Length: 306
Image (tube, rainbow, N blue to C red):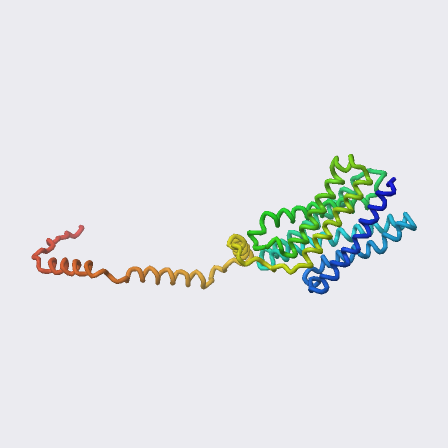
């Protein structure tokens, strides 16, 4: 049971969620970001709807709260995975082949995540949690791990793909990743077991509020779309290599023939290069001396073979 002071803190943090989310929605609508980040905008709207239906149920009916919470949690997991893909597409927007490859990989990752969640829910023999609840929890943890991986990728490889850390997509990923780290530490480690359920809930609420503040800051301030001053040679090589794999040149292509013609023209240009005057005089004198000499080759008699 929560003490009265902890209960007040818990509900204050919970009520702060829709306040910050309404701020995010308002700013995104004013700046037109809801068209660029549709799934992230949908995720924020889903969280607002979740609060609107779950918060009143917490005061009236525990059974209604139970099923509404798990239904909204499943919807939140789906939107969370879609937001990861949306951030990835925005990061690789200028690299079409890498973006297409990443989209295929994300589809397979989603399928594998669903299969893992189904296998875990079927193989779990626990009387405390239902199989469908276990499937939602497993999917949520898979999404959290992918979110952490996305943040680590952007932290270490943002320079190579020309992404500024002040970019909107970087801020969205940072908010999800930081919350995912704290949630997994509180739930899946000995830290949560030593703190107790009350402190875990309060800290989880506070961590999510921190992510909301990060998102408010990123959508409120105008950010550059992409840092063009960064070197993009390496991802361009990746892009070209993948393009060659997807679209190889046919055997009768004219491009190799033109390349051969250019090479022959360049080699002929080097052969026909102008000769220095000193070299030209020396060669002329040598040819004149050879012409004035009485040197002749001896006659060679070849006998026919019988």
